[in-house]
Image (tube, rainbow, N blue to C red):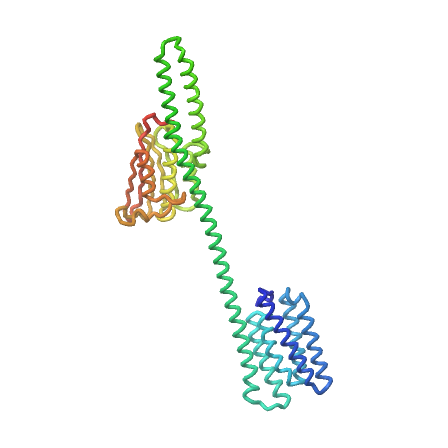
Length: 394
């Protein structure tokens, strides 16, 4: 048993147990008819008081066991002088169960009950059913009470640990959702700035340049148009800096190809993931890079969690009019036409993009999204995005 106090309730019960034992010793001494019995009661009380008041018995199980052995020996001496000492066996049961491990406390309780019966009859008292059953019944009540409390305490501790784990998990989930929301908002802002503000400023520049060429030489409006064009160019550069600041961290350290290569080098366990680039890499607008990276993360996350694949490959292909991304694995596969196909892959590694979200990302940029799979035949995810009219840059 754990000898350390666990709660104010346990401390209160211990104090009550000490008071009961001390009271029974006082009763035995008061009803004694010879000085030897009084001396034995006082000696037992002294041993009991030392252990009850010493901090060492509350810190060390070894010291507590030595004290309990000495207390039991003193009680046996008192029992040899007075049958009244048999009543002190009941608090001794609780002390033994409280201070000793179960493998030692149960034999100690049994021996104490036997000593109480033998000591009572050894003084010439008549062996009645009460004298025999009483110590055994008290021992049974003590064992049931202490072991029952221990079982309740362990269950309470398991519940407390479960609650703490749930609270910690909920906090981690909230942090993950906040991070995912922040990244999603950053991507949305980057896409909106690129698709509206940056493209609008770029168009203004082109229109001003055309107007500047159409003006006759020496026109007084030329200076104002040049100033407007320079202002639009500066604001376009600033908008592009905003877009760059809002791109995902995976793209901040380099190109899309570099981010995908780092993604493939991440898993240390199967499947083995390879990454290849086909064609001459071309600059892509930020929304294109974000969409392709997120789709690759989602598809690879599904492979790692569900496919039980041995190999997977991500291919980024730069073609004449489009860029394509293929994610292929040799895993368990599934039926894309089943009703649960959209839910089967589950949530992706970036926090919640399934097949519908991947398809929506591709179609939002005018691309196509296809899934080819069958049970036991692996899965192939293919995304094709046409280059923007501006030729692949923003």
